[in-house]
Length: 128
Image 1 (cartoon, rainbow, N blue to C red):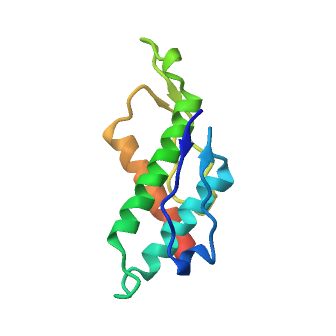
Image 2 (image 1 turned 180 degrees about the horizontal axis):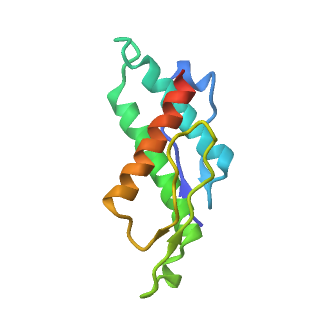
Image 3 (image 1 turned 30 degrees about the vertical axis):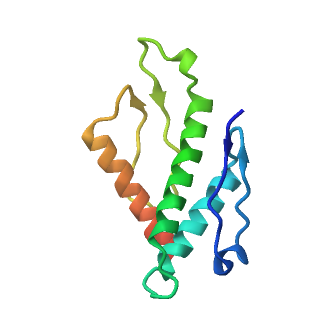
């Protein structure tokens, strides 16, 4: 079973968030918490006394590890053959102008751009 250990949070974040080690496939709530911690850290990174590039990097790596755990759970290596996998995107809220489609096999540059645009729209909405 996969165990993903989060970085130690400073007091100003640990008082708001409790990042616990992730065992196995991360839940949506665990992923949302990691995103929330990253957003909070990014929003205060301009304050010299709270800026911590090492923590930002560690949080990004923790999110990546959690996302990879989800991917490995959803697409086990034992199932990967010559067949093309179909990646089904999540349903986006109606106010997000991007429309994401199923990706069959490796994504094209245009599909990657669409995902990045949708992600920026969602992040902008959550910061507004």
